[in-house]
Image 1 (tube, rainbow, N blue to C red):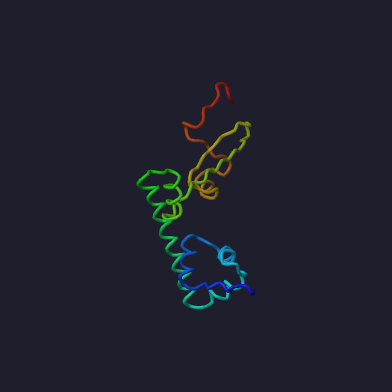
Image 2 (cartoon, rainbow, N blue to C red):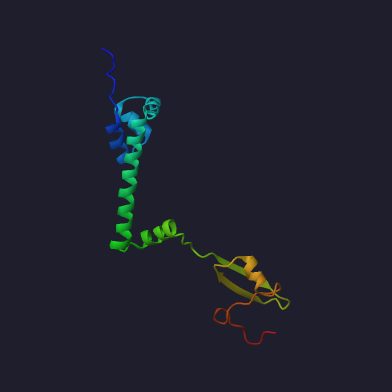
Length: 141
């Protein structure tokens, strides 16, 4: 007795895509080769169903993320969504140590500025730290 052909149509593709299955997983589920799934997805009705299922999954995931961030005040999700949706970024910290002629070390933390901006705004020989970031030792000099 020969192998029974699996009937895989638009409804099956949509349901599988709604739960995030890959083509390989769909092939394994129905006992066929992944190449058969690829060929079936070339049919317009199957591809549209697959895309619809994936879109549904994306909507459900985004909804869950927004609810976690906004309703549950999940700080990690708030930060991630701020970066992903609002284009927010962590401000880079440019730490720069320089030694002057007296061999004293001065420090600067410039949030959101790159080295070119720092150099343009300061003496290229030395970048001083803010008053509250640096305490000069007594007897220096």
